[in-house]
Amino acid sequence: MSVKNLNTPPIVAIKDGEKTSKQILISADEAPNFAMRRFIIEPGGFMPLHTNSVEHEQFCLGGEAEVVIGNETIIVKKNDVVFIPAGVPHSYKTLSDDAFQFLCLVPNQDDVIDIKK
Figure 1: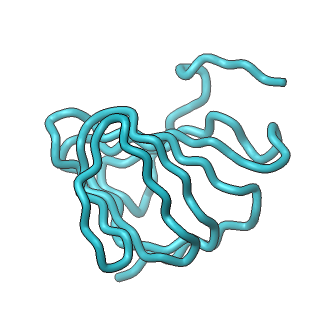
Figure 2: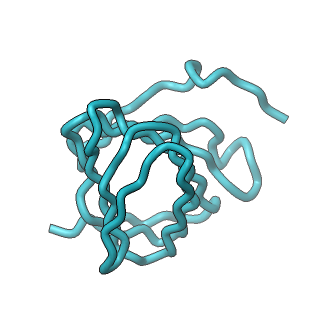
């Protein structure tokens, strides 16, 4: 069992994104099946189109963003839940004056990330 405050784990910039960072809340070392991360994309920020080799389950904490998933573009905001299948191209772009923040749960498997350029 593990309990920690949201402000305890470090927030680390993501080099492939613009004004984008992540925080590992529950690591693969702490839980046998899933890891939990928090992503923060500041106003004007984005994460470019990319694929992951693992699925994503996401819960939006705040802000608003344009999210591309495959051939679909949707607007996502606080309290929305998003599922991104493994291997499907996706991207994020903050639309609001507040940071777009979401929790992202992924299986504890090797995650190969491919940035589409």
